[in-house]
Amino acid sequence: MASLGQQAPVAGNGAGATATIEVENPATGELITTVPVLGAAEVEAMAARARAAQPAWDVIGFEGRAQVLRRAQKWMLDNAERVIDVVVSESGKTVEDAQLADLGYTVSALGFWAKQARKYLADERVPSWNNPVVAGKKLIIRYAPAGVVGVIGPWNYPIANSFGDCVPALAAGNSVILKPSEVTPLSSLLMEEMMRECGLPEHVFQVATGDGSTGAALIGHVDCVMFTGSTETGKSVMKAAADALIPCYLELGGKDPMLVLADADLDRAANAASYYSMNNAGQVCISVERVYVEEPVYDEFVTKVSGNISRLRQGPPTGAGAVDVGAVTFPPQLDVVQEHVSDAVSKGAKVLVGGHSRTEAGRFYAPTVLVDVDHSMKIMREETFGPTIPIMKVSDCEEGIRLANDSSYGLQASVWTKDVERGEQLARRIEAGVVTVNDAQMNYSALNLPMGGWKASGLGSRHGAAGIRKYTKVQSLLVTRRAPKREPHMFPYRARRTMMLRRAFKLLYGRGSRD
Image 1: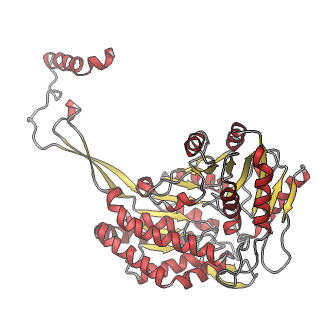
Image 2: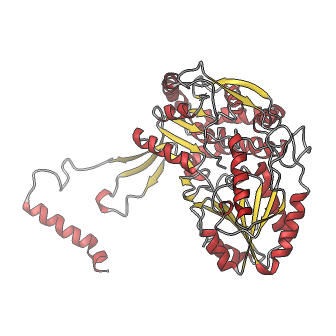
């Protein structure tokens, strides 16, 4: 669930820890605290400590690491209210959004990786019987920890998409340095406290607060980097990783389409569109950002969605159940949302609900429904990342698929139809890393199912085997138990042996070449 990657203003030049960042509550505008901006020297020292601590963490093995992760899982549940309060205070999201994703997802992830790390990273035996050249030899694939992993996290889900990426890296035996968003660093600092209290060895998990320069410094001192954020910032991260010659994994922007067919369950589809476009105030990379509805049910669908959105409550989240839609977390994002809505209106779109920022304290944009939209508008092509839902009429599913694929992004999409077999076939034609049928976003809870983007939406994936193996180095082992003192291909060369080997090649591989 990516966030946009612009940097927040900081006090000082970021050259050392004497500079600070002000952390505010986006729902009230109140200053919460300040955190230091770590400079290059501090980051280098942090990486050195992480590298020194990593071997001992690896040696304790999967079960030793799993015990720490399970203790952290219990800690989060025991301290749920505190965790939610910290997330809500620095992000401005609702209690429910913080509970479902930042708490709920992370609690699940801690247990999942504690259990599955051994399965995904166990040595793999490769058959040798089918290759006469290595017949009888032992072939093994081993997954070794990368070493020190750098995670650069976003502001929209300050635990789920920051610390959440650290969990599999830790389970694999790595040390991890997390550079959280400068807008929401407090949640990550709380996770650092949690892991220390749960028995994680010192310096195995560290949090480097700071701005963009802190993240840039981190890339130069780690063995691989995981970044969640905007596509533009992702390109910069990738370039820096290339200079450092380290693996780079990116979960970037999205403009996720929803395709509603004429035979869809309109009540479910409308309820899903309303929720999955507005949860977390639309600040979700797999948010429903554009909707294509077949003409026969378009008017009815728009009426249902507009009614749902018009009833949403918005304001400072004073407690559970108080509001439905929270604040815009990152200050410049409010301008992006307004720009996209204004651009659409100037090109002929009609606002049915919302369409404006709110004037009270804090940063809020009213939940917004737009119709009469098309692909000339930014709101249908660029990541809006706010509480908006543009709905476009299409003549049939073919037009809907064509428009869904008319995007530089390819993170996630959804198809809605009562004919699930047809829905699956249509889903396979959409250019996205994840496509759901009659659902949205719930795939993120399936931690054994890979989640990653196509096109400009990223590289690599979270979850599943790939989601932890990316934090490892692959080592191949070949073990010879019994062999002659001299193999036929070894020195000294002899014409007779050369020709004998050539005849052997023909015998072994000639049939395949004739086929």
